[in-house]
Amino acid sequence: MMSVWSSLVGQDAAVAKLSEAAASARAIVASPGSGRATDEARSMSHAWLITGPPGSGRSVAARAFAAALQCTGATPGCGQCPGCRTTMGRTNADVLFAATETSIINVDTARSLVLQAQSSPSQGLWRVIVVEDADRLGESGANALLKAIEEPPEHTVWLLCAPSPEDMIATIRSRCRHLGLRIPTATAVADLLVREGIATPEVALEAARAAQSHIGLARALARDPQMRERRRNIITAPASVRSVGEAVMAADRLLETAKAQADAQVSDRNAREKADLLRQLGMEEGESATKASRTMLRQLEEDQKRRSKRALTDAIDRALIDLLAIYRDVLMVQVGGDGGLINTDLSELVHQIAHDSTPHQTLARVDHIETARKRLVANGNPLLVLEDMAISLRPQA
View 1 (cartoon, one colour):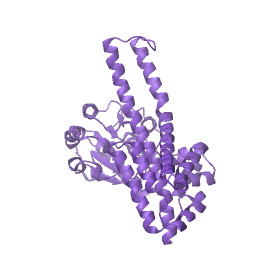
View 2 (cartoon, helix red, strand yellow; view 1 turned 90 degrees about the horizontal axis):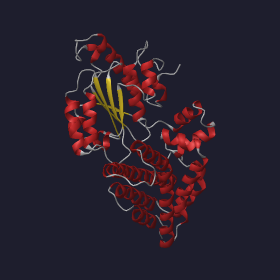
View 3 (tube, rainbow, N blue to C red; view 1 turned 180 degrees about the horizontal axis):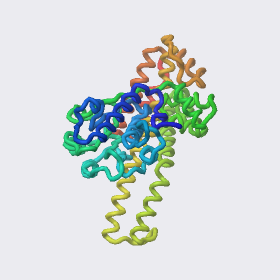
View 4 (cartoon, rainbow, N blue to C red; view 1 turned 90 degrees about the vertical axis):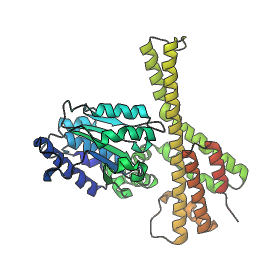
């Protein structure tokens, strides 16, 4: 039987800490009134900050830990009891998962989390609040959470997920126990994909390397040959750019590809949400709305625009990360590094670029790509940002 920890790949140290904390949490529940300061409870905390690079499994670790806290089996995190199954399935009434598909978690959402955190567990052992995108908390939202994290109700646990501790304000960071995750090896991710029956060992390893051990992305690449082909087209495009005109066209193609990916991700959901809202309002498509209905429809449209914007930004950023992987491979070849290539299927292209440029030029191109990523985060115009980057990636004399 698989435990809740089975989906955490290459995180043995983190699993050991979380397992110990879950056992301590059980001791706290078993000895009411003894407080959190007992020897058995020292490894448990009321607030956790789980950090790690994208793809390391932050939200997976948080969900597994939440399940272990609700577990009623012989060993915390058994994966078989109702507490484990409902939490892993995101249906446990005492575990709240908060994530955002927009660029920021606003203060209203944060206050709603604080309010829900005040409730005692209704069925399980703990009231657990999982904030999967805690780094997207605005200043007002973070301040709204601060008091609740500083003085939480008994049997309430906060699990905050962020790329790094520095992404959280110092006052929250200092009140949380930190757990750092690392990127698993490509081999470990490939083994997971094979165990899940997603792909053959060869395809799984290629997908894991292309995703740079990002587990969610590796799953998507392994399942979708068209996605692998789109990625290949994106990362091979700069090699064919020779003039400013070609660079501008390449940037436009990259943006159109990212838009197509983003639209595919959100379009069905947007249409479904609008249809559901119209049905709740008793309206048909195209029917004139009342003033109150127009307000609700406008709010939905604004939420969907923010979601679409984030989806586009994420799609472009993913493409830029793939471009960085190519130039990482180029630099490895140029300096004779010991690490293997990420893009093993593009070895010929990598060696060609390495032969036609210098390590200094490669590092300059990496800087241009990183600058483009920062400009996108700062709400730069995507097309202008990509055009500037593409022009900078042209071969230099």
